[in-house]
Amino acid sequence: MENQKSFFHLHLISDSTGETLMSAGRAVSAQFHAAMPLEHVYPMIRNQKQLQQVLDSIDKEPGIVLYTIVDEQLAEFLDLQCHAIGVPCVNVLEPVIGIFQTYLGTASRRRVGAQHALNAEYFARIEALNFAMDHDDGQMPESYDDADVVLIGISRTSKTPTSIYLANRGIKTANIPVVPGAPLPESLYKASRPLIVGLVATSDRISQVREHRELGTTGGFDRGQYIDRATIMEELKYARALCARNNWPMIDVTRRSIEETAAAILALRQRTR
Image (cartoon, rainbow, N blue to C red):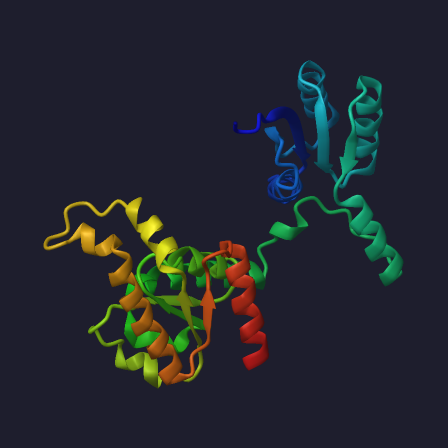
């Protein structure tokens, strides 16, 4: 019998977009498999009137309260009101800010949304995202040498989502499908700047993912062959040989999340720079 899951209310209050809170809340919630959070996200909360409306909602549906509010008076008001309601309340950033202040010997600026400033890093991410979209699935091969990373792999090895994730970290990433019998662009072999990484997985995993892929009515497409494990094993053999012949590192993505794959690529890039 499948284990029954319980549900709890998770209130996420932010004076900015709430992205930091959602990431933190979901990361912790994932450690508790028997309980499922019902998320209530309240972004851009910057005055007591807005906060009181949020508190009214919490009072109706009590649960865990996580918040990122840099205004100390507003944060103190939230703490006091949650204590009065009888719900746990945690300022996610405060312990980290405290450690930074102690180590650096200076107080934080307490500026709302500081991580979203339109600085050079922000524009680098936008440029990287545009690059990833322009160079998805083997497009624009003439500019591969402008990439930081080039991902190669057979269909359904998470090349595109990994490219987008890396782009969000400011890494210009191109990706190229590997098809037995179809040569890779000559410009890839001539590129000296990017780290070239092969993505592989088990034939079982790839077949499973391919079964759920929407392919439309591509002319001449053979779905049976596309998901056939023996055919996939031949594709993987070809891709592995290609990487070995060119000394390109490979990463097995079978049991890795996109984030874990990206972290492994960044570690490789650090070692090879």
